[in-house]
Image 1 (cartoon, rainbow, N blue to C red):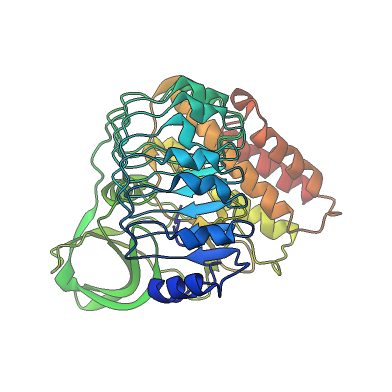
Image 2: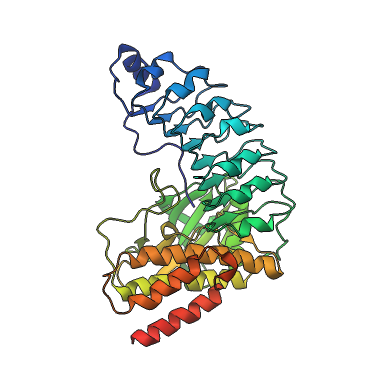
Amino acid sequence: MVASFTPAELRMQTPTSHSLQALRRGDLAGARELRLTGGLTSLPAEIFGLADTLEVLDLTGNALTELPAEMGRLSRLRVLFCSGNRFERLPPVLGDCPELSQIGFRACGIREVPGEALPPALRWLTLTDNRIAHLPEAIGARPNLQKLMLAGNRLRGLPPGLARAGRLELVRLSANDLDAIPAWLSALPRLAWISWAGNPCEPAGAPAAAADVASADIVTGELLGEGASGRVHRALWRQGSGERPVALKLFKGAMTSDGLPEREMAACLAAGAHPNLAGALGRLTGHPDGAQGLLMPLLPANWRVLADPPSLASCSRDVYDPELRLGLGTARALATAAARAAAHLHGRGLLHGDLYAHNILWDGTEGEAVLTDFGAACLLPQGPMGAAWERVEVRAWGLLLGELLALCPPDDAGMAPLRALEADCTRGDAAARPRMADVLGDLARSGRERA
């Protein structure tokens, strides 16, 4: 899944110096959102003049090492971004902010997370790419906690108190030092998206057979898209006397919110070929800048993303075009494509980890689709725990099915069996959910009954 720490909704797009001047003149009285990025070593006292209105504060990319003791005066503050600063501990004063629900402290050098730093309304916590070895028990005592981003730290275990986080839906644990993922995590009633690639506990996988493609044989074209882990270009692959149009993904090599790009590459190659996966055709070698890359099938130009990633407000749920409407047959086709892709991955010992509409590309009409983005993919353990994690991903698929059905006419006669399948896949008792192979059988039966 792709995330950004700088919300697009922020209206203050002027440089920090201009914003500071406006703040000190009083021009920003009544502002609900404020962006001050770059150059700050302390928080301007004038911010507290916005205490009765300020809801979103972006302090990304400064040189802050602490926050003032008066932070609790920002009684309406809901969202705080402090990524790229110099905090060694998550500031305890955050716990004094009564409405603060979303916190982003990525790549700050944080080593310590005091329990008192976790505000009571906490819903979305991002601590990616820090140096955290331990989490406090208090993290499980935040009843609204829904999204927890911890990739790229030094965690050796998870606090047992996290088992009480009944609303937790998404967890990122990649690139830590975990020797085991506790079984109780897979039993959380709402958990649907998780990744743990790059930990000692991840099973070893057989090296994937993939063609090595020399960079000299690739003609790179226009940029098609960009995510946290890399850029995708249109390209031509010279093969003998001919050329094949392909998509080329060049990886950035930096830690993402999901984990390490090299783990994404390995998972994409291990996934193999499937008609409902945007898999890899080959691995790029000899790039002049040393970049790693994958060649992938080039989809038709009219194909598009099914939905946008979650917003600040939706937290863990995708955002669909409000004008999008689907016939039930199209919704079933989309859901079936996603289920087939996931079932194929499960059969190869892989968990996708990010089964979302924003990672599905579709034809825009009939429901032909492929599942993309292996940034959160990880290798499944053998036996009962592997099956338990598959059922966590079945919940993600069930949520997707529900979202697709919400775009269909509610009075369609074929809706009932699909709604029943949605309920089975999203039930709170994770062990009672079907596995993805069973889901495919239910989809086939409901399709025959409709016909």
